[in-house]
Image 1 (cartoon, chains in turn cyan, brown):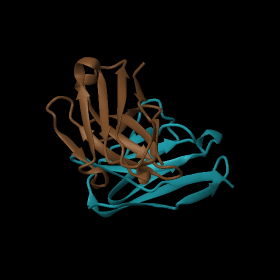
Image 2 (cartoon, rainbow over the protein chains, first blue to last red; image 1 turned 60 degrees about the vertical axis):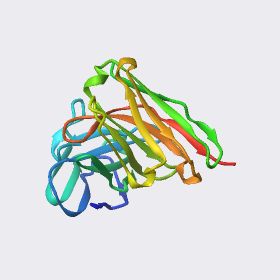
Image 3 (cartoon, each protein chain N blue to C red; image 1 turned 120 degrees about the vertical axis):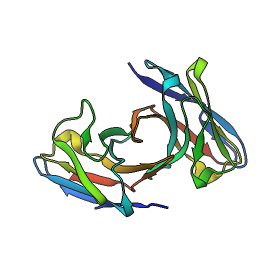
Image 4 (cartoon, chains in turn red, green; image 1 turned 180 degrees about the vertical axis):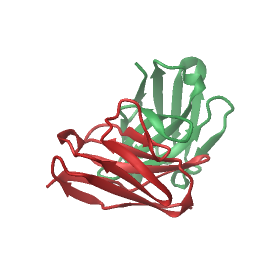
Length: 107
Length: 118
Protein backbone atom coordinates (compact mmCIF):
# COMPACT_ATOMS: atom_id res chain seq x y z
CA UNK A 1 0.00 0.00 0.00
CA UNK A 2 1.14 3.53 -0.74
CA UNK A 3 1.77 5.72 2.30
CA UNK A 4 1.79 9.50 2.23
CA UNK A 5 4.01 11.31 4.72
CA UNK A 6 3.72 15.03 5.25
CA UNK A 7 6.37 17.28 6.71
CA UNK A 8 6.57 19.12 8.89
CA UNK A 9 3.77 18.08 11.23
CA UNK A 10 3.62 21.60 12.61
CA UNK A 11 4.90 24.78 11.05
CA UNK A 12 5.16 28.09 12.88
CA UNK A 13 5.04 31.10 10.60
CA UNK A 14 4.19 34.78 10.43
CA UNK A 15 1.92 36.70 8.12
CA UNK A 16 3.80 37.39 4.92
CA UNK A 17 6.03 34.34 5.16
CA UNK A 18 6.53 31.94 2.30
CA UNK A 19 5.41 28.52 3.49
CA UNK A 20 6.17 25.14 1.98
CA UNK A 21 4.64 21.82 2.99
CA UNK A 22 5.95 18.56 1.61
CA UNK A 23 4.15 15.30 0.95
CA UNK A 24 6.24 12.23 0.22
CA UNK A 25 4.90 9.01 -1.21
CA UNK A 26 6.29 5.63 -0.26
CA UNK A 27 6.71 4.88 -3.96
CA UNK A 28 6.58 6.84 -7.18
CA UNK A 29 3.06 7.95 -7.94
CA UNK A 30 1.35 9.75 -10.76
CA UNK A 31 0.01 13.26 -10.38
CA UNK A 32 -3.37 12.45 -8.84
CA UNK A 33 -2.36 14.41 -5.79
CA UNK A 34 -4.61 16.95 -4.09
CA UNK A 35 -4.17 19.41 -1.23
CA UNK A 36 -6.86 20.42 1.26
CA UNK A 37 -7.17 23.10 3.91
CA UNK A 38 -9.18 22.43 7.04
CA UNK A 39 -10.10 24.92 9.72
CA UNK A 40 -11.42 23.97 13.19
CA UNK A 41 -14.96 22.68 13.08
CA UNK A 42 -15.13 22.88 9.30
CA UNK A 43 -15.03 20.40 6.45
CA UNK A 44 -11.90 20.20 4.32
CA UNK A 45 -11.65 22.46 1.29
CA UNK A 46 -9.74 21.48 -1.82
CA UNK A 47 -7.00 23.91 -2.85
CA UNK A 48 -4.96 22.06 -5.46
CA UNK A 49 -5.75 19.02 -7.59
CA UNK A 50 -3.68 16.92 -9.98
CA UNK A 51 -0.59 18.17 -8.15
CA UNK A 52 -0.56 21.69 -9.57
CA UNK A 53 -4.03 22.77 -10.71
CA UNK A 54 -5.58 25.53 -8.63
CA UNK A 55 -9.20 24.92 -7.63
CA UNK A 56 -11.59 27.60 -8.77
CA UNK A 57 -11.93 30.39 -6.24
CA UNK A 58 -8.72 29.57 -4.38
CA UNK A 59 -6.30 32.49 -4.06
CA UNK A 60 -3.30 32.41 -6.37
CA UNK A 61 -0.89 32.56 -3.42
CA UNK A 62 -1.48 28.80 -3.17
CA UNK A 63 0.45 26.61 -5.58
CA UNK A 64 1.35 22.97 -5.93
CA UNK A 65 4.22 21.20 -7.60
CA UNK A 66 6.07 17.93 -7.67
CA UNK A 67 6.32 14.54 -9.27
CA UNK A 68 7.46 11.04 -8.52
CA UNK A 69 7.57 10.70 -4.75
CA UNK A 70 7.75 14.33 -3.61
CA UNK A 71 5.07 16.97 -3.85
CA UNK A 72 4.84 20.42 -2.30
CA UNK A 73 2.21 22.95 -1.39
CA UNK A 74 3.47 26.51 -1.28
CA UNK A 75 1.78 29.57 0.13
CA UNK A 76 3.67 32.49 -1.35
CA UNK A 77 2.70 35.05 1.30
CA UNK A 78 0.89 33.69 4.33
CA UNK A 79 -2.32 35.53 5.19
CA UNK A 80 -4.23 35.55 8.50
CA UNK A 81 -6.91 33.32 6.96
CA UNK A 82 -4.33 30.65 6.09
CA UNK A 83 -3.65 29.41 9.61
CA UNK A 84 -5.15 25.94 9.39
CA UNK A 85 -4.32 22.28 8.89
CA UNK A 86 -3.31 21.13 5.42
CA UNK A 87 -3.64 17.59 4.07
CA UNK A 88 -2.32 15.96 0.95
CA UNK A 89 -4.36 13.20 -0.63
CA UNK A 90 -3.41 10.67 -3.27
CA UNK A 91 -5.83 8.79 -5.46
CA UNK A 92 -5.35 5.56 -7.32
CA UNK A 93 -8.37 3.70 -8.68
CA UNK A 94 -10.41 3.33 -6.50
CA UNK A 95 -8.61 4.13 -3.29
CA UNK A 96 -7.67 7.31 -1.53
CA UNK A 97 -4.85 7.99 0.93
CA UNK A 98 -4.47 11.10 3.06
CA UNK A 99 -1.30 12.43 4.60
CA UNK A 100 -1.35 12.92 8.34
CA UNK A 101 -1.69 16.69 8.10
CA UNK A 102 0.43 19.79 8.69
CA UNK A 103 -0.70 22.43 11.14
CA UNK A 104 0.28 25.96 10.20
CA UNK A 105 0.28 28.02 13.37
CA UNK A 106 1.12 31.55 14.37
CA UNK A 107 4.77 32.06 15.21
CA UNK B 1 -25.52 26.19 -4.60
CA UNK B 2 -23.96 22.75 -4.69
CA UNK B 3 -24.53 21.22 -1.30
CA UNK B 4 -24.22 18.01 0.66
CA UNK B 5 -25.95 17.54 4.00
CA UNK B 6 -25.23 14.55 6.21
CA UNK B 7 -27.62 13.23 8.83
CA UNK B 8 -28.17 10.21 11.01
CA UNK B 9 -25.30 10.52 13.44
CA UNK B 10 -25.66 10.01 17.15
CA UNK B 11 -24.71 7.95 20.15
CA UNK B 12 -24.65 4.18 19.66
CA UNK B 13 -23.45 1.33 21.83
CA UNK B 14 -20.49 -0.83 20.83
CA UNK B 15 -21.67 -3.57 18.52
CA UNK B 16 -24.59 -1.49 17.34
CA UNK B 17 -25.56 -0.23 13.91
CA UNK B 18 -26.24 3.14 12.39
CA UNK B 19 -27.22 4.38 8.95
CA UNK B 20 -25.99 7.76 7.78
CA UNK B 21 -27.53 9.70 4.93
CA UNK B 22 -26.16 12.40 2.69
CA UNK B 23 -28.60 14.59 0.77
CA UNK B 24 -27.28 16.25 -2.36
CA UNK B 25 -28.65 19.40 -3.96
CA UNK B 26 -27.62 22.00 -6.52
CA UNK B 27 -25.97 19.54 -8.90
CA UNK B 28 -26.78 16.42 -10.92
CA UNK B 29 -26.10 13.84 -8.24
CA UNK B 30 -26.44 10.82 -10.54
CA UNK B 31 -23.47 12.04 -12.60
CA UNK B 32 -20.94 12.01 -9.76
CA UNK B 33 -18.98 9.43 -7.86
CA UNK B 34 -19.09 9.84 -4.11
CA UNK B 35 -16.98 9.10 -1.03
CA UNK B 36 -17.40 8.81 2.70
CA UNK B 37 -14.51 10.21 4.75
CA UNK B 38 -14.24 10.37 8.52
CA UNK B 39 -12.21 12.22 11.10
CA UNK B 40 -11.74 10.90 14.62
CA UNK B 41 -11.43 13.49 17.40
CA UNK B 42 -8.13 15.32 17.09
CA UNK B 43 -7.04 13.12 14.22
CA UNK B 44 -6.57 13.39 10.48
CA UNK B 45 -8.80 12.50 7.57
CA UNK B 46 -9.49 8.86 6.71
CA UNK B 47 -11.12 7.76 3.47
CA UNK B 48 -13.66 4.99 4.04
CA UNK B 49 -15.79 4.09 1.04
CA UNK B 50 -16.42 4.99 -2.60
CA UNK B 51 -19.33 4.43 -4.94
CA UNK B 52 -19.54 4.93 -8.68
CA UNK B 53 -22.14 7.26 -10.12
CA UNK B 54 -24.27 4.55 -11.65
CA UNK B 55 -22.73 1.11 -12.19
CA UNK B 56 -22.69 0.08 -8.54
CA UNK B 57 -18.92 -0.21 -8.27
CA UNK B 58 -17.75 0.33 -4.70
CA UNK B 59 -14.50 0.19 -2.80
CA UNK B 60 -13.57 0.40 0.86
CA UNK B 61 -10.73 0.93 3.24
CA UNK B 62 -9.46 -2.10 5.13
CA UNK B 63 -10.53 -0.53 8.43
CA UNK B 64 -14.22 -0.91 7.56
CA UNK B 65 -14.16 -4.08 5.48
CA UNK B 66 -17.10 -6.32 6.26
CA UNK B 67 -18.69 -3.79 8.66
CA UNK B 68 -19.54 -0.69 6.64
CA UNK B 69 -21.23 -0.45 3.25
CA UNK B 70 -22.08 2.36 0.87
CA UNK B 71 -25.12 2.76 -1.35
CA UNK B 72 -26.96 5.48 -3.20
CA UNK B 73 -30.39 6.36 -4.52
CA UNK B 74 -29.95 8.56 -7.56
CA UNK B 75 -33.68 9.16 -7.82
CA UNK B 76 -33.65 10.63 -4.32
CA UNK B 77 -30.26 12.37 -4.67
CA UNK B 78 -29.05 10.52 -1.63
CA UNK B 79 -25.97 8.66 -0.48
CA UNK B 80 -25.94 6.23 2.43
CA UNK B 81 -23.45 4.67 4.81
CA UNK B 82 -24.55 1.57 6.67
CA UNK B 83 -22.36 0.95 9.72
CA UNK B 84 -22.56 -2.33 11.60
CA UNK B 85 -20.57 -3.84 14.47
CA UNK B 86 -19.55 -0.39 15.61
CA UNK B 87 -16.49 0.02 17.80
CA UNK B 88 -15.26 2.82 20.03
CA UNK B 89 -12.63 3.66 17.42
CA UNK B 90 -15.39 4.42 14.90
CA UNK B 91 -16.20 7.56 16.91
CA UNK B 92 -15.69 10.37 14.43
CA UNK B 93 -17.21 13.04 12.26
CA UNK B 94 -18.41 11.42 9.04
CA UNK B 95 -18.32 13.45 5.84
CA UNK B 96 -19.73 12.71 2.42
CA UNK B 97 -17.82 14.22 -0.48
CA UNK B 98 -18.19 14.54 -4.22
CA UNK B 99 -15.42 13.01 -6.29
CA UNK B 100 -14.08 14.62 -9.43
CA UNK B 101 -12.00 13.11 -12.23
CA UNK B 102 -8.51 12.54 -10.89
CA UNK B 103 -9.78 11.73 -7.43
CA UNK B 104 -10.02 15.06 -5.67
CA UNK B 105 -13.10 15.85 -3.61
CA UNK B 106 -14.55 19.25 -4.39
CA UNK B 107 -17.82 19.40 -2.45
CA UNK B 108 -18.07 18.28 1.17
CA UNK B 109 -20.88 18.19 3.65
CA UNK B 110 -20.49 19.68 7.11
CA UNK B 111 -20.35 16.22 8.61
CA UNK B 112 -22.37 14.23 11.12
CA UNK B 113 -20.97 13.02 14.42
CA UNK B 114 -21.03 9.40 15.47
CA UNK B 115 -20.14 8.47 19.04
CA UNK B 116 -19.74 4.82 19.93
CA UNK B 117 -19.88 4.39 23.67
CA UNK B 118 -21.66 2.40 26.33
